[in-house]
Amino acid sequence: MRFLHLRLLVSSLIVALASAASAGQKVDIYRADTLVKTQSENERNAAARATFGEVVVRVSGQRSALDHPAIKAAQPGAQNYLFGFTYKSSSEKITVDGKTFPAVGLQLNYEPQAIEKLLRDSQLPLWPATRPKVLVWLVVKDPTGLRLVPEVTDLQAMQLQAQYRGLPLSFPKLDLEDSLSITADDLWALDIEKIKTASLRYKADAILIGRYTPYSLGPIPPAVLVDPLADEMPTDTAAVSSLASSSAASSVALNGLVDAAPTSIIQGPWLGDWQLLHASNDQSFVDETPEVKGLFVSAIDHAADYFANQYAIMPTNQGPQTIVLRIGNITSFGEFKQAQAYLDELAMVQRMEVMKVNAEGLLVRLTTEGDVKLLMSTLALGRRLAPLQSDTLVDTPAGAVVADQTPGGVNDPREVNDPNFDAEVMAELDQALANEQIPGVTPAPQVQAPVYGGTAENPLIYVWQK
Image (cartoon, rainbow, N blue to C red):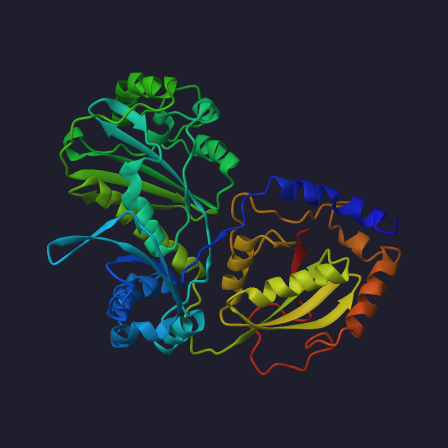
C-alpha cells in the first residue's frame, strides 16, 4: 500500500506512454549479407573486402568515408575486422565470369569495437545503432492520374538503400482506416496536418513524403497551404488545376484502396519532391533521375545524411565532456538499475557516476563523447527519459512525452519536495544503494573534464519512463 500514493501520481504519465510514439529502432549495423559460390576461405575474404565499405558507410553515416585514406588502407584486410560468419542455403544464383552457379548465403558479422576504433582513429563520426524509424508516404502522378503507392516491388531500390544506410523504414497499410484519413490529393498537395494525423497510428519517429512524376507530365506543384479558418479556396492556380485533374483518379484508387500500377513502361526522366518531417526540423529536397528507382535511392541518402548529422558522435578535439542530470520518478532499486543500464549503454556515454540519491531522484554525472545537444537528441530518440523542462536545447520529436509541469501534475515539484512523499520508499532505495558495492554509487570524485552542460547546481532535469 505504501506505493499507492506514488502510483496515483504517475498514472497519467503511464497512460501517456501507452500512446507514445516508438522509441527508435535498433539496427544491426555491423552485419553484412552477401552471396558466394563456395564456402572457401578465399571467397569469404573476397566477400569481406566487398562488404567492408558498406559497413563503414552504415556505421559512420558518411558516404564520403569510403574515400578516406585510412579506410582504403584497411579494406584489403577486411577479414581482420570480422568476429564471425554464417553460411545458409539460398535459392539465388550467382554469375561468375559469365557462368551461373547456385549461390550460398553468407552472413558476415563485423567486430563493433574494431570498426569503431578504425573510425575514431580516422576522425570519422560514429552513428549509434538506435536509429529513427521513418514512415514513408508516396504518391505518383502518371498518365492515369494520381495514386498512392503501396510497398511493392517497385520500392525494392528504396528498401535496399535503406538497409545499406541502416535506416529502418515502415510503410502505411493503405487500408480502410488510411482511406478515411488521407487521399492521394492530400499527399500531392502536401496537407501536412492530414499527413501527420494519418501517421499517428504507425508511431514512427519521422515521416518521409515523396511526390514523383515523369518529366513529360510537367513540374510538381508547390504545397497548397490551406488556412483552416479561411472560407476561400487556395489561390495557387497551378496546384488547383493539378488537384482538379487528379480527383477522379485518386478517388478510384482509394475506392479499391490502391489502384494497380499502369502496365505500360513510362519513360523518364523522373522528377521527385521530398519532405522529411522530424520534430520541427522539416527538410525538403528535389531530384531528377533517368529511372524512377534513382529517386528512391537519392531520397534515402538525403534522409540518412540528415539523421547521421543529428545523432552521430562527431570527432572533436575538446575531449570528454561532463553533463549532470537529475532523474526523477525513480522509486525502487530495480528502476535505478534500469536507468543506470540504459545510460551506460548509450554509445556517447563513457562513464556514469551517481552523485546523490534522495527524494528528488538521482543526481548523475555523465562523462560523454559529445555535447549537451547530442545527448538531448539521443535521449529524445530513446524516450526512456523525458525532459521535465519543455524549453530544451533541442526540439521535442512529435509523439515524445514531456513530463507534466502544471501545479498538481504528475511531476509537480511541490509533491516531490513534500517530506511525506513516499519517504519510506526513498529511504529503502538510499539504503539499498549504500549497500550495493558498485562503482559510482558513493559520491564520485571530481572529473577533470570541463563541464559544458548541466551542472550539480543547475542540472538537466529528466523523468524516468516506467
